Length: 116
Image (cartoon, rainbow, N blue to C red; front, top):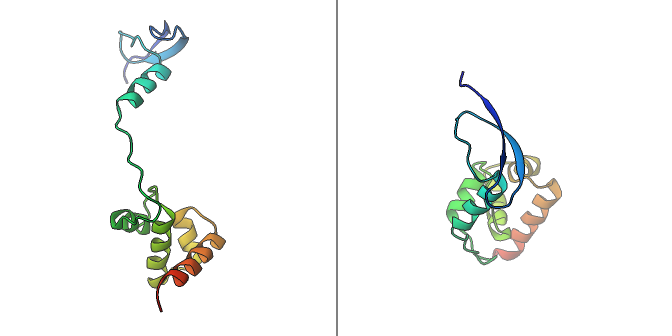
């Protein structure tokens, strides 16, 4: 088991003092808050997709049970795909993290938009 050190440090950026436990003799000079801001500042912005755009990769990942951010149009496609596979509204709701009633709404919206 690695040796744990307890240190008090003052952040070089914001001046906050915090008690940390670490495994190294050298303590980082920046607190977790400031380090998180630095990391977030270097991440590229996530491009926004139009609400009506459907990404088939996102739909297939969501249908297989992965928690991915989806638009309403993609959720409607996921509900349609899982309904054709024989899943109940309760099972689909558990996969998408929504209520049964929302799944019923998505089904009716899909039926309304698909030409007969």
